[in-house]
Image (cartoon, rainbow, N blue to C red; front, side):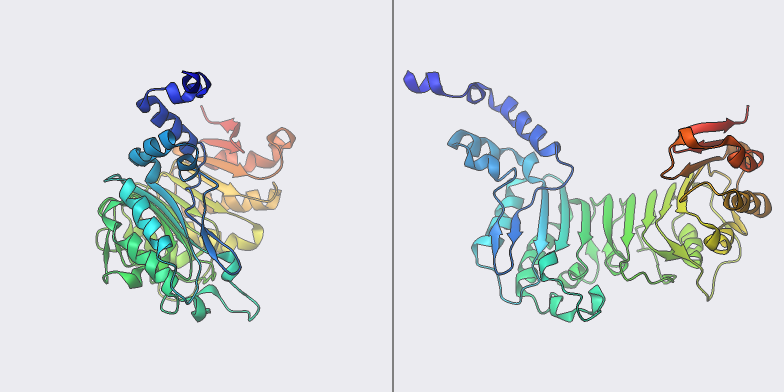
Length: 368
């Protein structure tokens, strides 16, 4: 009787309700829970965060956590880049983690251990061959386990330039459930994802021209595309490659020389986001020159400040190229300056070529 009186009230909850509490705890953090912690000389299990933390509270919580497949369907895996294989317990734990997720779709994030990366030689990520999985038996162990569950991948972020995850599977990795993907260009080219809708291509080496950016045969249903760095020619090729694209975000772009496409029409693109400065006007103008975007409804431009000359350049590009339909277009200017400090006279040139002008979402002009 005394034991019952001192038990926490939460242990009196029905199992189904306790499971919902566990899910709320996991979903409160947008980042995937980590399974390993990498130190300078060793790799250990990360028991400081859920769901592993939940299994260490008491036997009841451990049993409930083990039977709640949803809390094991997200995982953050750090690749150490170490040459020696891992102790058997660590890859076994990864296998157990995936097994506890049952048949649920998986949300994965795969990154390199920053403590194992060195830039002292001035080499790019791809050139650091000592980090390559062919040299890292530890990474290979983990990647092979993750690839064994590729049929359940739903959202995957490969932010490890040393991973070359595709090398550990077939030439083409079939991922029938994959809907969201963040990766390097080379990884994307070898992933077969017929249901992929959101794609973010990371390009840390900042190569300007990635015009050799073909879509995988069944990856043409992408609706959202974000490119970290690309060329103006590649943007045109992208509009042709992805006919169902609705939202495009460009973090950076530059004018590249070589073969391009003279005229492009894309009838589904509704939103486009890209940076703009006067120094980039030629590149910006070339993006829209001889490009027809009849369904574009929102153009978001990231600027440092509202410069009258830059706004006039934007107006001229929209007016001269005829790429968009004025009666449907909203131009949103994103910058650090609060909208309350913006002078309406500065943005007035855009009124003639848009339906609506907003600054950080605040409406400054709307055509009736």
